[in-house]
Image 1 (tube, one colour):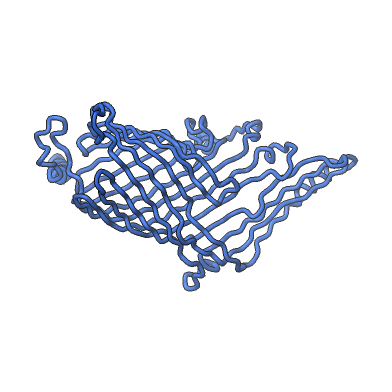
Image 2 (tube, rainbow, N blue to C red; image 1 turned 180 degrees about the vertical axis):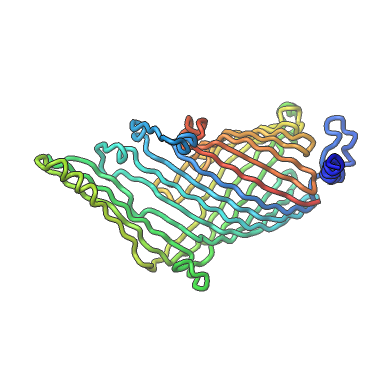
Length: 401
């Protein structure tokens, strides 16, 4: 009885796959069982990540944490993220359209290494930022002669937006004294006072993304070994900024001035007098845009144009106003193995969102159903990204016909 039940389950899984075969390519000796592309698709998923540059996952969950104090000179960097997408799309011969909704949350902490190791410094900066965005909009693409153009206008609301007004450290010895000054003031903007949904005082923002790709091999006299497409993507081009009005202030710090004749116990007493405070809600307008990105890429099919293997390098930059240094580089290379559009495997080495990411992913597609699973090791430090100092995992589901 158990064998019969197991066979029935296998049959229910295989039937959608049989429906998904592309009859036109059924006798193609390269891909005789290629799954058809969907004409209608609904998808959703969830992904999350955490990372730092000093402690591996093994260190964190061990009974005893062994910490190398010398590494504090590198500073402490930590990131966390969450992404929850939902969308549906319609695909036609030369164009497609759909809608999407997404919740995207990020947080980043970067403590200056000179502060953590008590080195001499004047007004060294650190970062503590966080943001939660809800966005919704339209997915669309169309072919204009040989070009494929993707256009994605979006309406977004910042639900939470945290930026440092000040976050600095000073340690020096003016006039023979020892001076230690540390202070932070964080502006915590929320969509409404106390997240009261009935009293939303934030106006939505509007931006759009656009991408253009071109099949270079359409040019004449190109070797089949150089079959590739090139593209340019611009993400979150700001049009109208969201305006947040309600915020409170989280502040704290200490100011210690030590005379050479003072006792060491007096210094420790001064260090223990760390002050912190949280204000009531205040009102002050702040314009908020989503991070902007621009990057170039090339999708190369080295096996004489076959989609069995695609290698895609990319290079670009990002601008994020949440950081005191808003500009960062975006670069990497990804490879995808595609077996008849039924089984896909992906691998990548990238530096994006100020993180080094080493990723692996798999997808199983039966046309009416597809599941994608992607995992990555990541860190703010390149070597640390190979030693489990950060981890990300996402899973997505697609349904269609």
